Length: 84
Image (cartoon, rainbow, N blue to C red; front, top):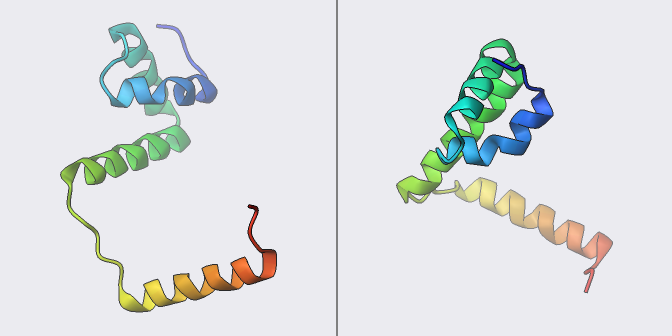
């Protein structure tokens, strides 16, 4: 089995996560993930994000967080203006 780089994993990641990659590539990626904790964390995070998105459940943002986010965005907009 050929060893692949982190960049090669990232370049082929969506094919792998969507189960569209050829078997040989899947084996290479899985071998890489066994040895590379950084890529393993990336793949795990993306896999969980995709599952959450596909579940269709709406995540509710706490009011305080929404208020802080809105205030930060308004401040940034006032300071930097619009790019339009």
